[in-house]
Length: 98
Image (cartoon, helix red, strand yellow):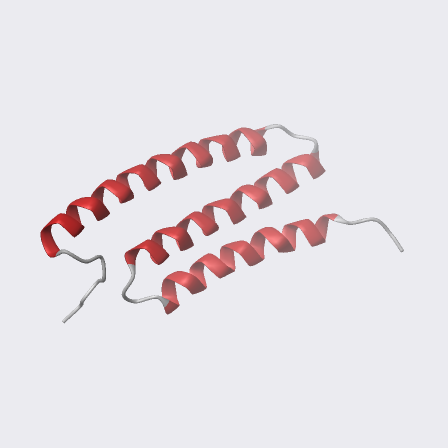
């Protein structure tokens, strides 16, 4: 049995991104699930970037991953503030498109 290769780790990152996209497409009403799905997409992209960066022995992918993590943290904080203000106005967090 060989050790773990690059394609296994790259596949994990791509699967996480795909799960995030599926979570957004399947979910139509709950905004918190949509935000969690976006975070899963960010983490999948980070995992993929770090994997490729380690394979190529280049630090630029790891630096870009840190920037993506800071953007994801800011996105989560803004989204939480928007959800709280939406809840104050409508008294629920379900999205109704009707």
